[in-house]
Length: 419
Image (cartoon, rainbow, N blue to C red; front, side, top):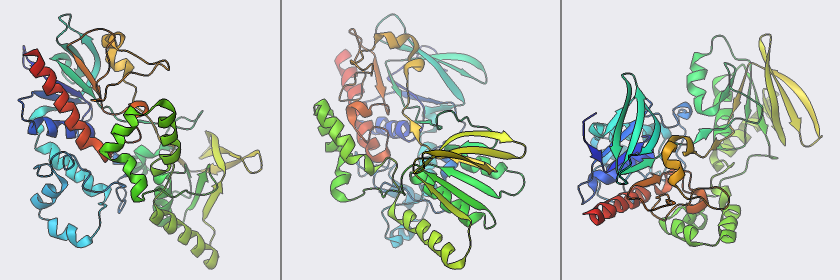
């Protein structure tokens, strides 16, 4: 790490959000220095769910840069052109690319910013330096401990996989985020596989397992009466527009709550219409053919899972009968979502400088900067974990280009003010 360097921005985490910020800083009119730190050796955005043919749920134009800068050299269209596939993509006449293609785009964009990224290091804390003008970012890596200084820190460590209450991951119980690696490591045939969850990942996994394990029984444990379709209609999708973020931020608390209740079906515990129809067709085909290997347990949730001899015994609670029953499976996969990131432990000595609301949540300015309890020239920004202030798109791809531009502008304005 260069000595005596104080970066304008140090980013913690280098998934799509901070990658988008790196692009915004590179393209900014002001000269802004940056360094991004990530513990993973390479981009690992939803690597466990890069299933063949799985589609993105946001349009390709909601990439790292286009909404902020339509002529960016880091846009998805620029990626297609650079890799010689622009014409082929257009011929698809589809606004929604595959997850695998989008991941390849992220890798391509990172390669163009490699000098700003340091991978294989874990940030262990952030502390004030005492001069009020910078923070010290502490880290550990293969070469031991290290640190660097920054005037602003942008935290984007991503969502945290969430398991059902009382169930822990092991060799035979997986969270969906690690599905592909665990699936490829399985030794021996899988004959009975369960999937818990009601959202997109759960439905995609049921379809994938049914298609790729032709001799296996697949059990879907769905806490609703059936999969609910995602509302992707134009007016509902306006909640993800940049203006939607403005409206949410400035709305009173009761209006924020109403927006969540009305429009959570745009993203949470919902499934694309095409995937639902695919699964229903498979279930129908089973009935007409007399086969019986796709089992939907609706209004049901998995209460426990424990290893018994060569099986994983799951206890399932049925809300319909108000009773529990047991099933023996080879593997249980929990597609039970994610919790928002909690930066409190990471913030270390800086945490006491930050203001919180009456519910203990961080107070966040419109430019995504945390409000400090006292005057400070340092800025701590969040990309994610701000759903309570910035709405449904706070942790989603939909607004990363705009959000990154706003953070870059905020950092630049503070730098000019210091001068």
